[in-house]
Amino acid sequence: MNIKSNEIASLIKQQIKNYSHKVESNDVGSVVTVGDGIASVYGLDQVMLSELLEFPHGVFGMAMNLNEDSVGAILFGNDSLIEEGDIVKRTHRVVEVPVGDGLLGRVVNSLGQPIDGLGEIKYDHTRPIERIAPGVMTRKSVDTPLETGIKAIDTMIPIGRGQRELIIGDRQTGKTAIAIDTIINQKGKNVLCVYVAIGQKNSTVVQLVEKLKEHDAMSYTTVVSATASELAPLQYIAPYSGVTIAEEWMEQGKDVLIIYDDLSKHAVAYRTLSLLLKRSPGREAYPGDVFYLHSRLLERACKLSKDYGGGSITALPIIETQAGDITAYIPTNVISITDGQIFLQTELFNAGQRPAIDSGLSVSRVGSAAQFKCVKSVAKSLKIELANFHELQAFAQFGSDLDDATKRILIHGNVLMEVLKQNQYQPKTFVEQTIEIFTAQNRFMDDLDIDKIKDFLDGLMIELKKDYNYLLDEIYNTKTLSSDVETKLIEAIKNYKEAYIN
Ligand code: ATP
Ligand code: MG
Image (cartoon, rainbow, N blue to C red):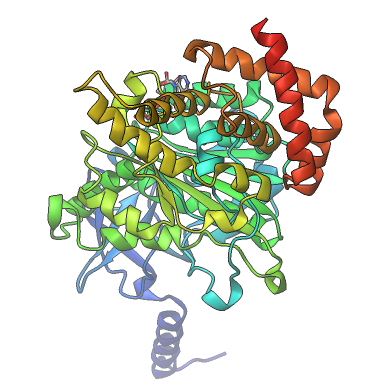
């Protein structure tokens, strides 16, 4: 067959025309600069915000800054493998993590990849880590308690399923301990847990997982870990990955508890990568959108209404303060986003008051709506009594001759403080909490030595379980303290105390 030369030319032209149709030139770009876990990429005109980008050597990144002539990307892998001029490909997907029951009992990194040496994670789908939080119309107010098993919290600062309660305090004041005890207490309560470790030491996370295993709590828990040795970008996305895993369960109608330990380090990681991305620094050198960083995260915790499955995510973010300063930038931000805070005090902690909860500065704005009636009835005056006690305590330091009324308040306050002490890994049921506070509030222990109180209460519980189990059952089943039960309880405690003293 004869083909004329001008036909060949037109054929080639046609081919070139079609070819340029098939390949989107803006699907690939090239690295301009790279370092500190950040790459600047030229040529990705159409890239989406938060889109996953593929770099050579199996390194992935995420588009963070969409500038006019370049894209600033954070890298999730070893940046020393990447060089200037390397090809970067779009993936047309935002960053996603695997979700579902296959994650229970597992420790994963911020990308949902297993790091516990237990092999592949089984999952049938993934979810994007950024998502708009459920709207107001799909939500419902909290109505079920999330029991922490910690007396001081469940009685005075109750948390409801779907609530966001901040745990705040200086370093080494027992913040993580509260979170872990709460996870341990969810055993058998149909609550799945996600613990997100951000910027902590590797060894701390390993120990924590061991503790959870020891208390049989890993079977309903997923740990997402981005330790201090990891790149800032991985620390930055860790909480979003965690809440994405939780959201899958919430949408299946389940209750989930998520802990972010801690968001101060998260803010620092974000500040690091923002500065490297050349975003302008604001107050305390944090970028201007640092409030949005945490608000869009915590807004994803909620209780869904029945029509949407009735699931919930309860969020316990943790913030570390410097020298008890809760008025610093990040603490005030997160305080204003959450529904209350549990404030831990170094002085209390060092004085042996553990958990070191400051009842005056701690508050739960919505949780009492979900509190069991029996706990509410015995605990209603607790906070005020402690406030009075602390006020008088300050005065009592100066004078020795106090009137009887003052002395009584001081003695009773000391008893209450003692009753609120609780060891780690020893969560108490709401029935036990009710009885212990009830015993204190009926002044059964005001005449005991302070160091006898724990022993007295432990003995009382054993006695009640032995001879008065029907009373405990009734409180457990009705969740209330009827006057009939109250009378019988007082009788029982009286008998026990008589035997105890003699
Ligand atoms: P960091 O700032 O290092 O994260 P943190 O505030 O999370 O510290 P934890 O690690 O929870 O504090 O606790 C500090 C220490 O106090 C630990 O050794 C822990 O075992 C101990 N501790 C915490 N709570 C209690 C408690 N209720 N009873 C006795 N010891 C406790
Ligand atoms: Mg901690």
